[in-house]
Image (cartoon, rainbow, N blue to C red):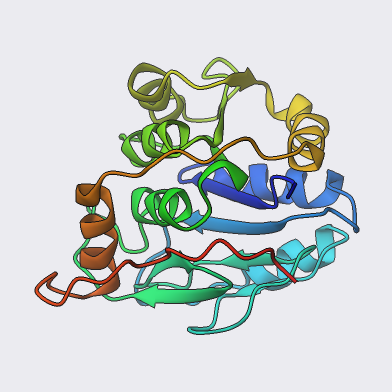
Length: 226
């Protein structure tokens, strides 16, 4: 049985520091691919990839449309594109903003739920407003595991609070506890996948930039990552 090899992390305000800490503490041989969405200005391609690579043990880079996924890598949503999982490849969506953001966390989490079901570990860290709450709910109802940073530990508690209230996560943890928890979770066998409503698949298509008229089963494959 496959392990939980899809680790999907969303954050906003205060998130750079949180991501640096995770990159530093997660092991080089993590048996999962790590996907990150953090709200970035559309006009700015930051050096976050270099920062995370220097801080940690796994290489990090901004995601490229269509690239094949590999384990022990960190993929970052580039400015002005939604980061979407589609089977063994990544897609960069040009759909509308969600929660006033593109990239947004909810589309990434929903695509992971559609694509990878119970193989997914979804994480919401520090941030403002409520991006990530709806997507995290979807991950849990697709059979994935959900983790939220303890709001009392977050630099900006609003986003974790929204996720707690909406998604009722499996785990609430301080940032210092996250690396050990996430490493344990991704090494566990994935449970049985659960069906994802057609409406969620449609939302992923919209985030991808499709109008839904020629709807196809986006992310219906469940291959293991390389």
